[in-house]
Length: 122
Image 1: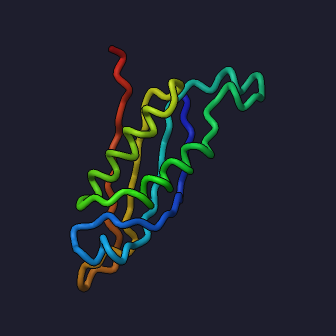
Image 2: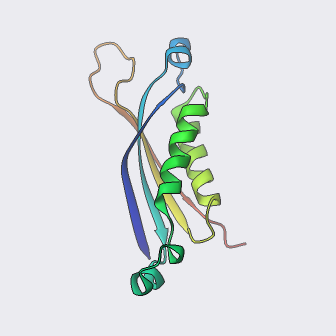
């Protein structure tokens, strides 16, 4: 199966366990891998024969900006489920959601959640 990678989608959002994260917000980074058949668009060179990934980028940014969850796991799952539901062309999606500056004392790394969702064939 073919795939499209979208990396480094940045957006400011208000998901977090600490109350100040939900009030002050923070930056999130999202990487997305989209599985779909791109063989037709590879031949026709027509955008209507593939997935216009600009819509996926906009969807991710909107969800990060407007969602207010406690856990990043829920935000990542919401993003994956929403992307998968947004197009009949998609068969599977992988979302990696990162908090590059998690408010944890003496921690300089980033927190990332990676999950994969597959469209049901039922």
